[in-house]
Image 1 (cartoon, rainbow, N blue to C red):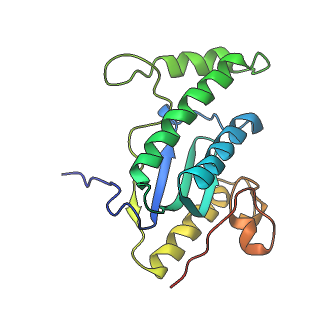
Image 2 (tube, rainbow, N blue to C red):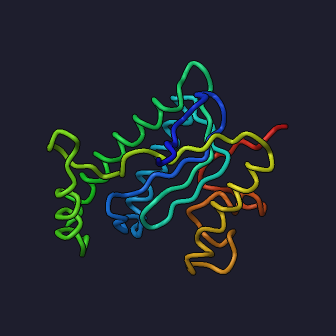
Length: 182
């Protein structure tokens, strides 16, 4: 029996992963990354989202996040994934300079929702794991920040621009962060 990862306590920090269908390398273009970053900022400003750590890889995103009441984290995740899915597909459709446009759209259009309609940009679920201790938080934060190093993109975590690692090395990050309070 497979373990079902889900958001348990709506107001506790969770480690989440959002993966593009078929692990398609979409986030190799700054424009597509900007859509994700702008959407995360919107959620921070309007949906009570607190971001502790994050990293955008070429085909998936890792986050440690929490929602403040009255917002439920599962609702924010649902809204974020739905909105970014539409925006990213639209951006690919309208980007005539995208050398992979036909291929990306072909792959994405073959991903239908449960009713056989629309495009599924993100894989279902978010592999949610509740952060239950400071030690577990540090373990997940290190996992997130070392992801680009393990992939061979950079030699050290703070070099990856699409991550919160630089914040922990004194660099101003692309997203405001919350820091763990014990």
